[in-house]
Image (cartoon, rainbow, N blue to C red; front, side):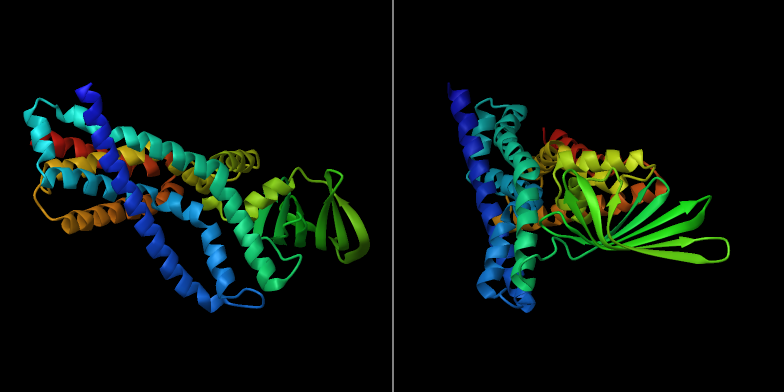
Length: 354
């Protein structure tokens, strides 16, 4: 009974600190981003609309700041208990270090479940809706869903897409068809519309490259035979980082079916799916700091070390991500390497402190 009560006390302190840190981080990010985005005011997109847009993006920001929030929150929660000698009393009463760490990990399990649910079901939808809503405010009805285009290969054809609207209409589509590494046909369409489970091109120009001449045909409408669906094109033209894990996995499989590299979607997929291990390793580092070199320092110093550790962890993952493409190793290792390094450092420092 006393053991359970101590676990709840530790969990309450750590979870409360994590919530406070996350609110502070989101608040600071909201204010700074709001001031920066005021320069994008255009048309019906005014100062109030900027605020609404940033509020729509809070789930994605929450997901981004979750690892740092957990690290700093664990440092502050455990640090406050260390400063008041509560951890010392627990250890003197026979409470093992492993048992204290288990009390810290319990709220982290809840945080991980919330973060994974947001990554899968909430942030991809809010990001897509916020992007479409912002562009509609700036450009009016029928605005494009994304401001950036994209390239895609399918069989012997290469496609360039200008943009895709919220109603699944593709704008400014060009197809280049090759045979024996020679360009044979180029098709350009003002837009492609999804009707009755198939694509239909509108305002089409088809250029065929023959032996000594070219032929041009124009069509008001023309069928487009492709395996790509509106959902796949949305994944192609949307920011890969903000997509749900299930979408990233489907996108990676599609790229592999086309004999293309799927490093980028797999990298973000593993970052999200290995989030529990990432947070657990950061908590181990936080606990090793509190029980070791940061046991008696001020709270501000702990926060400083937490921020530095979080930045080093993030930059290491950001460096290993492109390296996985260059050197050809699995993107999963680009995520696991910093995680295992943090876990190893945490175990080492905890073992030294007993």
